[in-house]
Length: 349
Image (cartoon, rainbow, N blue to C red):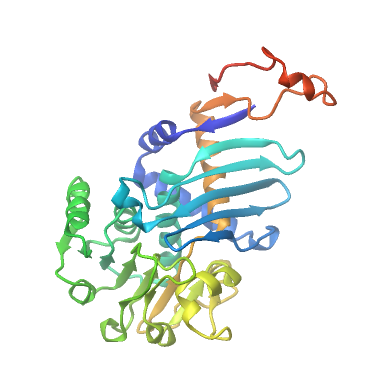
């Protein structure tokens, strides 16, 4: 049987744990797996692109578990009342191939994205960072704000989006956290001015220059989240040239990240090596650092692993017969007969 975690179950799980605790624990789980980086069989995601979006499969495995995520990115979906990003995923046993978990990953991907940003910022941002600019106030924005406020000591966030309704939504949602000061900026440049950390999380599939060199101040850490597929960028190329750039999985980031604008020999640093202590992160207080984040399958593996453990601990989810019962492993035909293998989904005890 396979544990099934749908959206209501994921919502209950996050509520039971607490959203900020969930983010912190997930960041720790992702870092634990990054520290085991050489153990994993890795590849860039398989993508099917169209003029209006992308659909991707993201696989990764080690000797024990295999995971994949199905995810899309369609910026125009909001005009249809749909989410820009939607996802689900599977965690399976390597020794049998059997699926252990089938889970929604739309909500969970938002949590893992901000958890990955947090993990990187803990390693790369200045320890005294207290002010953040958040450019792009869509579905990912609250998660980024809470991650940095709750776990990195950010006290003040300047927010900006070309859609004022998105910014209003963000401010309303974060009003439940009175210890976080939110400043509504009139432009990207205004929001970025004086920021220790700049997070860009815009959705348009375009070669955009959200952050330009004139906005950069010494010691900034830039968390570039929105540039995550071919033809989609947020940072001016000269911002990258003037910074120390860190990536998740270089072969994928070369294709999808902001560094797609630069030559293949432009130097970048693997984030996992910084976490493992084999490579230097920030080299000085005045250095500008960039985390060119595109999202990598290992982060989803960590999320599925964490969700499965937490759901099992709390007895959440349903057991579903995703694979036929093997009363006779050589007889699959019997499952075409009416009444065969009709066990109803049931709550996990």
